[in-house]
Structure formats: structure tokens, C-alpha cells
Amino acid sequence: MKVIRIHHVQITVTAEQVDAARGFYLDGLGFTEIPKPEALVKRGGFWFEIGDQQVHVGVEAGVDRAATKAHL
Image (cartoon, rainbow, N blue to C red):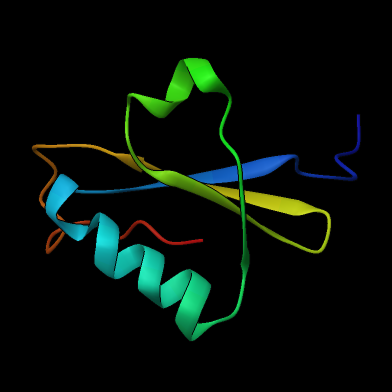
């Protein structure tokens, strides 16, 4: 089996970081926000796309961001 495409990547931020993350990706980098399904809106975060790829930014508490090596 060969992977030829990734549908989306999900990253997380704390609730306090959502506005800064939105500003960075949408205003700073110029990506386009796309609507989340209505059932997921209450979870917070936002989604955006780059070309035909999506990045989902979710809200997650309790993660030590200073210690993680997570990246895209």
C-alpha cells in the first residue's frame, strides 16, 4: 500500500491560544478558514485550508507544549 494523499492534519492549542493561532495562520500566513461541521463547532478551534489540504486546529488542555516535539 502506498500513501498518495493526506486528507488533513490536526494540531492543538490551548483555549487561551485560539485567537493568537487564528491570527497567525489566517492573518499572518493568509490561509483560508473553512467552516467546521456544526456538530464540532462547540468544541472550539478552527479549520483552514491550503490548496486542497486541510489543517484542523483543535482545543486541548493539559499538554506541556514546552516539552513536546510535535510539529507538522
